[in-house]
Image (cartoon, rainbow, N blue to C red; front, side):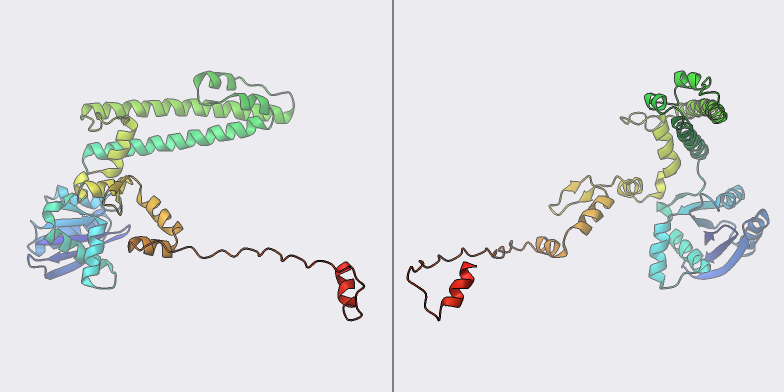
Length: 336
């Protein structure tokens, strides 16, 4: 038997099907230890103690549920959202939580061998938390530097423009002893700058400690990106934390599309390194008529004739005899 679970923040929807795809029962539980216990007892009551469980995107709201099910001895698989989306379209219009749980169960029944485990390894989870904490510290440091420069440039713009990096140790030592003047505003600004310099120095120490911890974890578990040119420990930790278990991708192309580095096939049959965003932008900027002619291999249309101004006609030679009374108005107009 197979179980599909659609996870949410407060409640989870579960659907139980048999080996032929027929729905046996459905259940809705709360996202709490009491709800997990209710789900396990419900599976045991329906003789599904050895059922395979599929969970869609269990990285956030379903993490505790996956841990409880794995602890109870169930095989829990991760179902990608694109598979559920495709199965939902096959089943017909409409989207409900029980319907999504049923679609997840059918995906597990059909593609069980292509799905990876829902519970992430400890290394992936640890690197994910460390990488997220490092990004927070870097963001806080950037905001502190911007605030420091904003206060500094209001009182001494020449000295502020002369400093390129406010996060280096030499500049921070000078900023922690800065004096701007004797007025109240200058003394307040100098104190704020000194405090911000202390904050930046403290954030530098925290970021360095996290970098060392990430490097030690990767060295302990054999960094898979060690041979990749230009990939340091921080980039390797980011890729591992964001990608997780690579078995949840169909193939290498799916993983490349997830990273935004998939080659796009061109009209000539070759592949280009442009991303999908570049191709979409090019398609939007190309006129529809030009795109249709190039796709149909039509000949280039002849350019339309350009209209040029005609050269003025030569004036007739002037007559030196006296003009007649009939042509006198015309002659006077031309003269004027």
